[in-house]
Length: 497
Image 1 (spheres, helix red, strand yellow):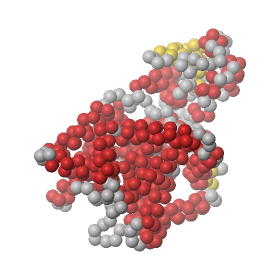
Image 2 (cartoon, rainbow, N blue to C red):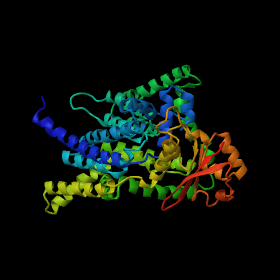
Image 3 (cartoon, helix red, strand yellow):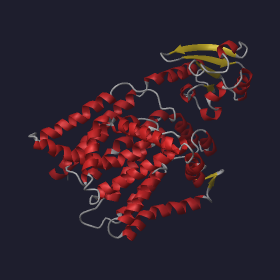
Image 4 (tube, rainbow, N blue to C red):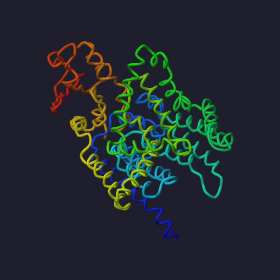
């Protein structure tokens, strides 16, 4: 039977879950078009469901993650590929606020922990990404569970064995995003540097990692066709990052790329963490100067943040690209400093004569109102044209499976969404490479790849070596329909056999 005290403890969690699910359900409903890389996840998941692992590896990313494996499960539950894949993000993006709150509650009063959790629950960065077809929300949840177990210290018994659960969580997160390795490295460094029973706690934390190494070694001998656990989960990621790393990263442009990274990272961090939250971040970091050495939460969070920034820096040096989504590894531990900032701001205004309850309510509104205005509204409406074109082709083809060479994979995806069998837009090649071909070579490529429809896009063909519309022969291309937006124009041509 739930006591009054237990009810009071549960209310903040219930409140945070309500805010989290309401904002995400709205985004779920009003995000009309899937993200571009969602096509790859769905094509690969479809192939996995049919047991075609070789096709799965060639139809999208060259690795298979835990997210890929969950999509067929949720498809079986929902009966719809898009709804199933989005539901994974919705579920774990919503639940992630729970481990975050219990982490914060270990060193913050209830009201301050709730407000810090509220920032996560309504933050536009986390809300919008919680309804995308991406693996990030699953990663957030598992990583936060790992951080919780790492920092958890029960009052009535030693907490050393929670290191096993923390290590296990991080290993599970590794099957979602490879970047968790920097959290694991930071955790080992922390265990060897601070606290008692260093050797024992480090050993317990590393037990799951040792277990996964043994599984991988055993997996090298367990094959599924030409694939095993190593080259499905691990080898592609290691190869992507480390192959040619020093030649690509450390070159004559190192200083210039470092400056570019700093500007890009700062801008994306402010944008992702949400501008109204910046005062809490600044106050939290400023107030932590004296507490950093004696506050284990801040020490650990700072270590994870520094290593995560370093990993993003190394990634940028090699690829000269930085997505805002990648900053989640920095933002998640930064909530400990956000919580510290919230805790410092409330007493400051209390000294000015404001009552604590009034200040808490005012801060809640300060968090919610800007976030709601950012979260409301239709999402990605400028991409609706891709869905419209795909559905138009699907209708005129009576849901017959077609291959489409288009400037965006989503066009072919929506054109084939209600057909049976596998779709693999990735195998058709990149649209941009077709523009560089001569007209005869383009025609030959389209026929060789058995392309049924070719989409001409005005913006993409502006700098082409020839005028496709003038060159298109009636015996090869038949104009089907055209669409015009405020940015560009599309014309669909049927490729005549």
